[in-house]
Image (tube, rainbow, N blue to C red; front, side, top):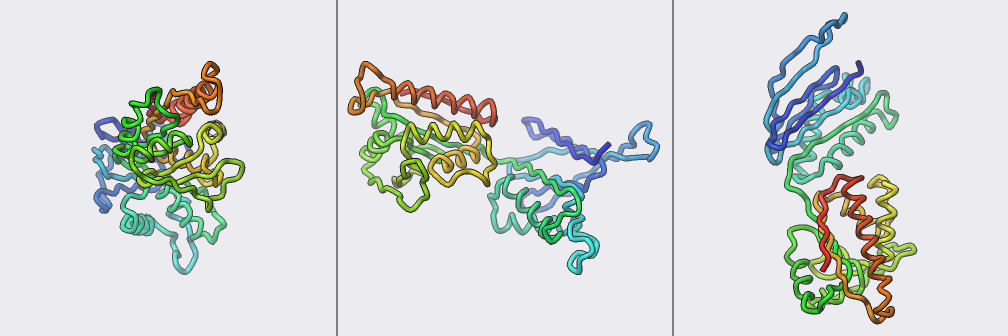
Length: 301
């Protein structure tokens, strides 16, 4: 049986953590490391008298659990700085420092920081498996993506108000959509030419909006990136990559899709652009729910 750490967390915060032959997990609550009681259980029919440790506790908003392999706390062993390895106390001190400097650091970023430091301790030649998982109980991060003007002009004010009052980050995809929101909110649109854009049109800026991009081409590129599932560190440095980064960092994604036909671009009797937008958005929604386990709400206006 290989070393392992298992955590089971219910919706109400009731948690069971089982550890076998791994370093003890860390539990940070309000920047303080809590040391819960652990029950030791002898594995049945184990000739080596192996023991598992079982912890039962209740988690609360703001709590962080850090699980890691012994490649982390034993990193740097034999060096002058760490003659006996980084040790649990060293990992604890490092985590404490990260939380002090970055109180809202994400689970992903904290785990990455711990792994990078352990590799650095080994002078960038790891001597063992270095694995780390972080669980962070927090409010869901929300993201609103708007694309396409509303079917009726009377809904323009509703669209702009939704963007302006949304309790999370906001992204606008589409020139006409951004013009409507800028007009209704009495704000300027500024094209951002300093961002590497590749084959996609440049992004723009509207005060109070996190990202403004072109519509169909960019959303199509977003769907393609989501399908390929790259790591956050390898996302393209363009508007589509920036959208995917914000999506991956969010838990709840609201997609608001306008259904007005752009008569300046095509025959109103052939709403090809509208159908393309709908299909791309539906594909993105499916990928987010099925592949990334996001909570998605799709609204057509």
